[in-house]
Image 1 (cartoon, rainbow, N blue to C red):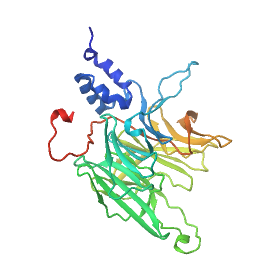
Image 2: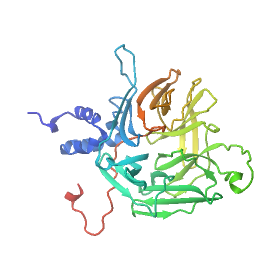
Image 3: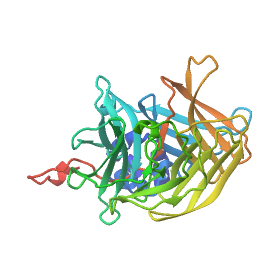
Image 4: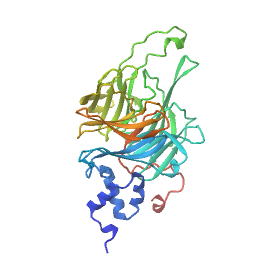
Length: 402
């Protein structure tokens, strides 16, 4: 009789590639061989079906719910023999997600950081989760969290110790800019205040992208609060150019201004995405311009960046405010996630726009939304990074640590 442990490695790989991300921990318990094989495969992304079938694998926040997503762009044919896009989006059923609303999601090194509230409350919470290992960790604030907090998740490149950056900017009494910067260290399970006084602004909707342990943001030079807030009259202020800025989790500081390939105006779309852990992609769409531009880094470091053009497509009479996107280098296309109302303004729809090089735009319906907010997504590759709370005193036995 054939046992599970007797199955060929190729067959096991195919089975593992079809397992939902949040069920991988159960699969690892099947037998020692599957545990060892799945642990090894996670390091190379094979669990993401990178070899068996090219697709985007990740998580998405939609209607304040956490969803897993597989977005297949390769070789699927419909009944007419035409290739089409096959998204698989499923709400995740997991104990700590049952009674919460999720507002933001961040990814680094196989870990997900979620900004959320309990459904019956308003206080923000931070939870770090390793879906592959089934581990969660509640990050308690130094004092309190704020609804306008911005975060980044990264790690020290010398020690590989993971850290969280929290920062907040607000006007006190309508005139004084106040900045708060804190960093959480997983190794000490504690927060520290950072003495940073920035000369730049990061708009509230701009989410950072972590690459090689460091987080990159689109920012612009700080020109101070408008004159009317300081008691003067209204005054037209020229917009400052965008640039890229990196928070280095090793030095715990922001680096110098790095160049981008575009200059934005109000209501223009510009956003970042990452390709595995090697490249950064930047998307730009001017409100009054037909072109959608995507650029990819040929070199990216905390103090240096070089860009090469990836995609430039004319889309007349079409605008979106997508906060999330990913690209497929092989197929030379971008997939942008956005939300829009129908003509009667009664229902808001979540949509993925597939933008190939030839400009033949395709719309993929994701679902309805309770409000007009863009779906937030992040790519994902499983990892073995441990995030269990630090224990002091009695040392755990090997059996307890399993």
